[in-house]
Image (cartoon, rainbow, N blue to C red; front, top):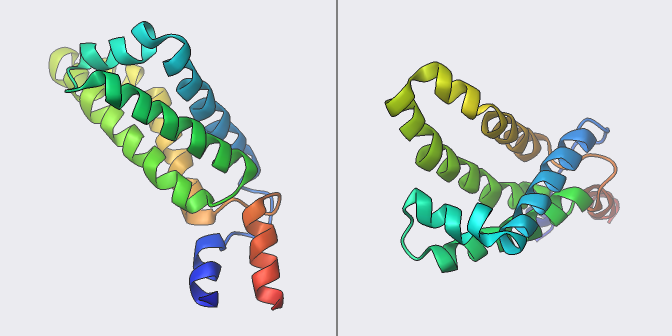
Length: 148
């Protein structure tokens, strides 16, 4: 059990993850909340426009994951686990919205439109690799596990 706990909460013991956590956490928290506040623009309406089946369910399902995982990333709790659904959300966004741009308008138009998606995906990968860092709940738990 100690090994599993250590694996889940393992993180670097410096501050390199603090800025990526703030960026990823705040952006996903904000985007999730906006899906509830402005459903026709960025929630259900957007999911309908993309062509998802059952957009009413899916938009709120994704929004809820964005809010929960965004908060987890911000406080640095279960950061590696929280990064997995966010990575899946980003891959889905790229496949459903950026690949069609690539096929329709070409590489440079797609590269321009996907710059934020690319940056967010790289930051999520960073957090998955390094963990939440020193100023996090994961670090506190990791420290307690190592000392016992």
